[in-house]
Length: 188
Image (cartoon, rainbow, N blue to C red; front, side, top):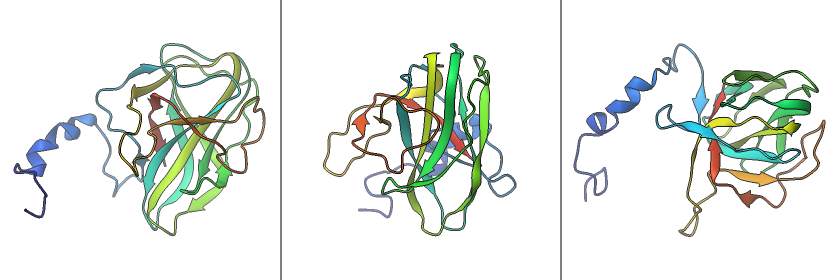
């Protein structure tokens, strides 16, 4: 067994395609993402009034001030409420953005919302970034399709929770249900 387990190749060569993803240098521009920027598509990740959350790895010392989700080919149709939120790995609300009420969210548009206060990460690990839209037609999001956890200890790549949500993020992620559609999120 090698330090790389059963992998016998050069990790730099194997992961070289990620360099084409166009991400900025994290030393110059702080950001974290839950997915690479390749292989993404338009996914119907939202249901009106239901929160969708995805795990995102954050490092000790990170300070998260905003979250970005990107709409796909479908714009938000007649939104009444929408917000983004950051949760701890245990599912406790850390901060959310202001409710955007009826503000438009056009198709193919990156929407960056500032959290009500910066979140200083004191422990590296998985956190959850969440999006909720109450609208006649929620926007589709840029993302991918993930498989349901199979092995013990695997977590959901995306999950839904809550219903009839409006202005405020729930205090906890309660009774999360597996969701196949996994949106891309950037934490900055």
